[in-house]
Image (cartoon, rainbow, N blue to C red):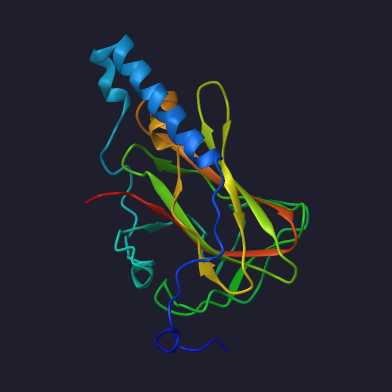
Length: 218
């Protein structure tokens, strides 16, 4: 049984080292946006900023100094069916959850990613108002690293954008905020795009849980 979150001392996440790909993505997104605006100022509507769904919002990372509101990715707590997720390489729903009860209660399940395994979330809508996402993770044994990508649906087919690699610690901890590339997605998809998140275990065995997107509605 996990201890009640009030008896846990929140720690600054020491597990995450988001590699240079995140900065590269930000630069690429900004460059694409500037190109669109410079070439066709009248088409600024390609970058939508309003809410694109009515999902419930919460502040799951507040005890780590992040008071932003987030929405849970579909099936992102792994408490129910994972039928909407695409799992490969032995990825599976297993018993055990992050102990902080950020969804309102301590869960009973998370997603296990053995080395080489991959999991892709269902698609959900994002636009320029959805700049980042966070999730909980830990290594299940030896040191492990998870590659994180966003996958956009476009008129030309799926486009994969690598975000970075996350080095995990032995304890459940939240990752640092990671970019969705939503500005680039807006350009590629006409304002509002459909995005999925893909997690691939590069080394070691990993667990992930409670995957959230920040809708930036503030």
